[in-house]
Amino acid sequence: MSRFLNSKYRELEAYVPGEQPTDMKYIKLNTNESPYPPSKRVLDAVSTAEVAKLNLYSDPTCKALKSAVAELFGKKSENIFLSGGSDDILNFSFMAFCEGNSRAVRFPEISYGFYSVYAELHGVNYTAVPLNEDFSINVEDYLTNDATVVIANPNAPTGLCLSLGEVERIVAANPDNLVLIDEAYVDFGGESARSLTDKYDNLLVVGTFSKSRSLAGARLGFAIANEAIISDLEKIKYSTNPYNINRLTLLAGEAAIADNDYYMDNCKEIIRTREYTVEKLRSMGFYCTDSKANFIFAKSEEIGGEELYLALKSRGILVRHFAKEKIKDFNRITVGTREQMDALLLATADILKEKRK
Image (cartoon, rainbow, N blue to C red; front, top):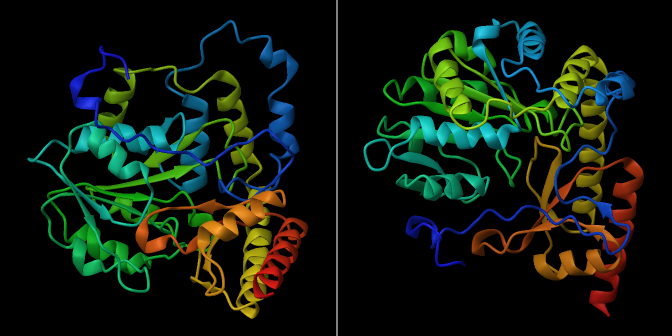
């Protein structure tokens, strides 16, 4: 730390992203990327001719992509916000809709690690609400109408999902505060709250192209809300970096929307592979939550979470382990291809066999 750092950031604990090691070739099941590549239409869109135009700025209004997203979800362009990844949108939202003590924020204690980081980054008081014993969210904890509410649905890293009815209860009970539903994983078995944005003026639904649309490396996210909330987000974006989505990413996003069937078919395959893997893990004695995301949250009574993570890593398989006390026995396992998951299962069986000797 230099002596020049602003004093309010000196105690900030930065978010720790999933590791991206290059020391050997790994089966990567640690960062919830899609195991399937972008569609051919995306590859064609990001052409040599378009690369040659990188001397020009991108369209800060993102007009063409906004129109495509709006059409896909049955909305108006004025109801769509685009930015460089859903994390960008979350950050802008904490800036726009939270404020110190006067507009605090409430989110689950076990959830996406960036929520507490953003709160601390922007000096916002927050309440990290404990989950139920089974890691589910207690809806009653979010009916207080005294703070901005942020919920990942499905939640991460548990994969558990609130029903649309439960989400609506929370939105309806907080008329004086924004409710942000982070739907990064909704395409893998959840029910989106997008339909509720026409009914409630305090709802912001955030989505991403990183998971179900195979564009994690492109950094592209979207949000859906009423026109006033979108205008607020645009103000923050234009006050930081209006060109925060590059030309190639905009084109890739448009092509991905046009090839929606390809990506939804991939989601169905990921769901099938998830259920197959959960069944196999449970047969080995693992406890797995009822995940509706593109990952599995699992623990074994025979081996600790960190020990299993390290043993798999030594065999060339990466999963995600969290040191937080309540979940330290678990690992979050991204759902890969069937072949990748079979390799995980085989390695896990070997590790347990050695452990029993």
